[in-house]
Image 1 (tube, rainbow, N blue to C red):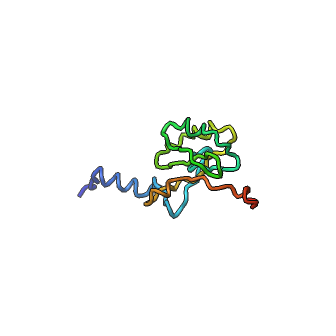
Image 2: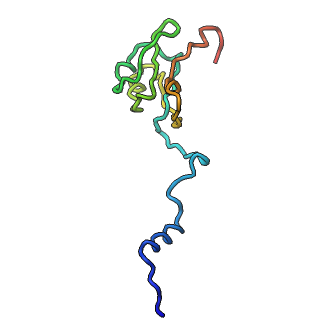
Length: 127
């Protein structure tokens, strides 16, 4: 009896069975986020002057200006955001920064709104 030939599919399975997996064990093992990643926006209301440039320049219309503490402040709709960060580029005071927060999936649409919170410094409380 001669040597049995394995089918090409079986050969392929055996080759890949011994290789390192191509996928990661997420969410058990969190991925390493590279520098420059554009995650959820971080907004510092104390730096904002309420100029509205972020809202005006947003290509997807994901920012609306709402009144907080007597001034207009940006309200981010992350469900519309394309994470281009034109808002951060347009902000003259650097009140909008990127973060490494990428887990934004939610069953509640209201979780995808980044609302400006009233300033605690106005009430005499330091952050």
